[in-house]
Image (tube, rainbow, N blue to C red):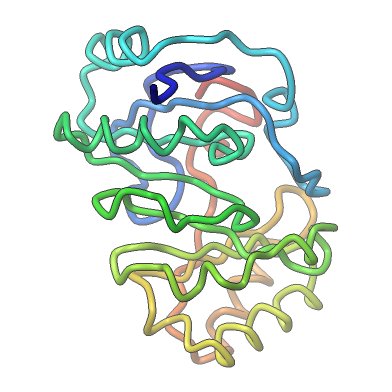
Amino acid sequence: MTERSLRITEMFLSLQGEALAAGLPTSFVRLTGCPLRCHYCDSEYAFHGGERLDFEQIFARLDEFGARQVCVTGGEPLAQPACLTLLSELSKRAYQVSLETSGAMDIAGVDERVSVVMDLKTPDSGELERNRWQNIELLKPSDQLKFVICSERDFAWAELKIRELNLCERVAAVLISPSFNQVDPSQLAQWVIDSGLNLRFQLQLHKLLWGDKPGV
């Protein structure tokens, strides 16, 4: 029988702070656990602990929140196999579902109705070798790719990969984010402009509004 429970760090209603849905009221489901240890991680509190909830408990909380957008995040959500079932069940319930994933886990089983927002880890993330390059071929035109940039070296690497793999033509958006307090956002914005690529520079809206704290 398919497992119908997950270990959850938190669930909350907020505004989506990143990607193409930025600014939309969104229910967040943050799963516990992650096999990566990126230097810039802002959700280390989700590595351990959490509360095991069955799907009906999750659905009940989402119904209370009332938003039609649902973002499943982590940690690394795909580290829990039952996440794939949850994504399909949420899609069947007519939610607009997005999945935030590190790019280190196989996305082949993700429901095609889900919008995948996948990282590619840069050299200064400390997890470059964890990129699962096979995932690039599995991305849909409606998906998004994200690079978190820590340095000029990171941006040069990202620009090389974007050109080499023709990423701007593969997905709906290639997102460029400054690592919080590690690279000057204005400088990164200029690098994006100078690249001549069709990139989407983004700041984390939720941090601008509420600071760097859990549950918002």
